[in-house]
Image (tube, rainbow, N blue to C red; front, side, top):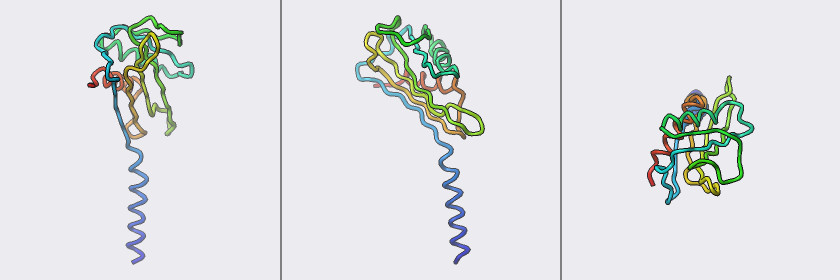
Length: 146
């Protein structure tokens, strides 16, 4: 009886320890009146705390989609583009630093009103490079349906 209880507890502990490590999520949503097909140029707002080139990874993902993208500091609206991208990058330590979560918001250049939002979350076992996560988020945003 004690052996079965110890075995069950051991299995439960192993499952609990390993099940939380392999999480990933990628999503995007558009505002009902957003039409991203009209977006040809994008201004990516550099976050001052970003020392890992996430802004450049987003710019590269946009350029790969055929858009003209520039990176620069936050400005007072209106921005010199068809859309403005702001992002939040969350980093985690697990033997090495890795990008845990990236949230990208596409905003109107005149008033920074949100038009679309995309998110990518990859924990340690499913981690991706910042370039791959930026590409995943940008692709999901520009292929999202209402």
